[in-house]
Image 1: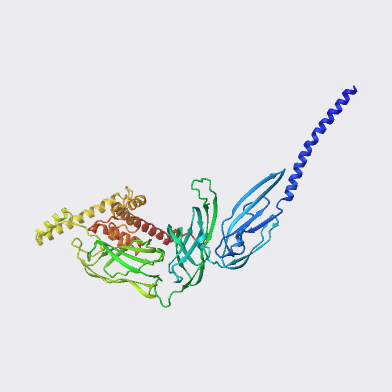
Image 2 (image 1 turned 90 degrees about the vertical axis):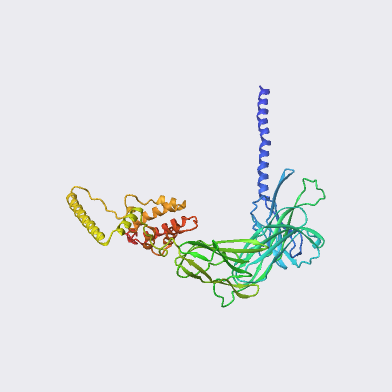
Amino acid sequence: MVTNSKFQWRLQHRHQLLGLPLLSFLLVIVLQCFSTAALAATSLRVSVDKNPVMLGEELRLTVQIDEKVSSAAIDFGVLEQNFQVGPPSISQSMQIINGQSSQSTIWQLSLFAKNTGKFEIPAFNVNNVTSSPIAIEVIPDSHTDDNAKVLFIESSLSQTELYVQQMAYYEVKIYFSGDLQRGSLSKPELQSTTLEQIGKDIEGSELVNGVRYQTITRRFSLIPQQSGDFKLEAPFFNGEMIYNNNSPYNYFAKMKTVSAQGQPVSFTVKPMPAGFKGDWLVSELVALTEEWTPPTDQLVQGEPVTRTITLTALDLADHQLPDLQIELPAGVNSYAEQPQAKKAERNGHVVAQKIFTSAVIATQSGELKLPAVRLPWWNSKTNQLAYAELPERTLTVAMNPNQTTQVPAPATAVPGPAEEKVQSATEALGPWQWNYLSFALLMLWLCTAVLAVFWRLQNSTRLPKKPVTTSPLAGEVKFNSKKFKAACLSNDNTIASQQLLRWASQQIHPEISQLPELIKALPECSLRQETEKLAYQAYQALQIPWQGQLLFEAWSKYKHLQQLDSPTLLKPLYPE
């Protein structure tokens, strides 16, 4: 029994002894976690690879903290006042040595000083750990190591003295020697200045001080909007290049981060000269040209021709070109289309054009004088006022043999074969026979009218009243807006005319049955102009395809304005 009791005691205490190491292990882990948390972020180190640094030379900045933190824990925007700051490269690591773990986060980025002098990299703070500031001295570039450069940038402006809204060309050229894999160039920005890239990047090669460099050229158009002195900041390039290890078959070559900065460019913008009148245009060349389709100096009354005037300017953006003030004399109608503006690059310059197209219809025969078109502009090359001009043009308008009245005029009904027979028969009769026949017809008509009135009085109480229509278009066939829209969009002038006349007879006046009548009834508006174009389709010698979208838009606008003008459709301003 003693032996058994001793065995039980030993077994019980054995379980207790076996539990002690497990508890100790867990306690050690907990204490280590607390000690690691307590020792986290004990230092924040900042260093640079060189000091002093030359202007335009890369300064490599390294920031390291012994903790794993977010990549956005440091804001490097404070450096942008004195430096061009490249995108940071961030790496994180963790090590365990003899049961002790350590973590770190490292930022590396390229800095390029904007000016010479003494500057300071300020102290950074991460998780209540602060680094020490670093004083940096920037000295002028001696240009003694051009041959040793792997990457450098040159930037230039075509003109350093401009007028306001005058276009200049800003060029950035990257020189590199090696295998450049990728990179990014900072976009130039300047307040009160419009900068747009022209075309695509141009690749080439140049020999500089006996060294062959590959080049990438990027060009921008620069248009200042205000006068004064300006400074365009130096461009900044950041990329990656393969290490040159003289082994073309090394497929595991390391990548090297490379950066470069160009030079800032200063320029002066002069205001518009005093006394200049008109739309301000400054260029080396502005011209006006015109074209007639078909090409002719003789028009036919009522037949449309197309007049195209083109405004061309060098070193101007398309949105800078103004609209032309085109005056026309009496006896001619003009229907202008929306001007079309475009631009293109030619021989390193931007060429802008604005095209004005209109349909010209002479309404009177005889001699027609079109006045000159004149546009003032400022010649930046001669520094003088100049004019782009179309001279006065004299045209001859011939009488249209198929048109007996002036255009526009209501269309007269053409007598049919039956009417021609009646007319010829009445002309063959003498004066007595015509008067006798007329008297007989008159008496017959009076009798018919009396009988019709008597019949209506007799049947007025028995038959329901029906609406009387005075126009065939205002009868049972109603205007269909969907058919009218479909006809306009499909350029079907026949159906569009039918539907438009139905609408006019039902909404404007019931006696409107022809397009000239509708034209007279409409006020001066876009709908009247488009209706005139539709009416002139029948008078064209050369059938030009009709475009109906403008007619539908003009009709919709007119209908909307009529609804707004109608007092019955207005809602009360202060409803009760």
